[in-house]
Length: 206
Image (tube, rainbow, N blue to C red):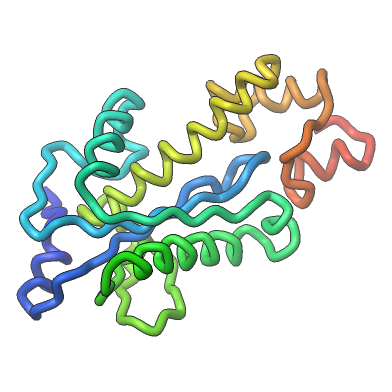
């Protein structure tokens, strides 16, 4: 069984107090921004069952989110769909992560960052961990905060445009989502450089 506290313990043992876990959500959706979170947990932090947000039910994610925003130091980074189209999703994901880290650094003296998969160019030490959201408790916490933050945006969009089904697919290119686009057309917020959206803009069906 994976010890989610291992990376953090190693750093605490070296005298490092403030460790930020960083993750992003929203690379795959056709609409809306990419959202990242940086989360610093208290040293004695324990939250049973917390893991990669993708492995949790929505109900559990919401419970953990409420606890995390009340009991940790965190920051959110958001990069818009316009900027995703300008600089590409990889660069936009990196930027969102850096914005989240900067927000935390405005609150505390962040000393080390654990990042899910993506190497970042920072002026503080960082460790990039493949599948980090399932290996580090700090990254898992960040993944929950980022996921719930972005999902809330999709629920707001769902209220405005219920015919698209954003509450269900969260903007990902499901069959139902693509069918809705073909039927109702594009609304503001779609990522114009993404394949299915490009097709529609060129007058084809996605």
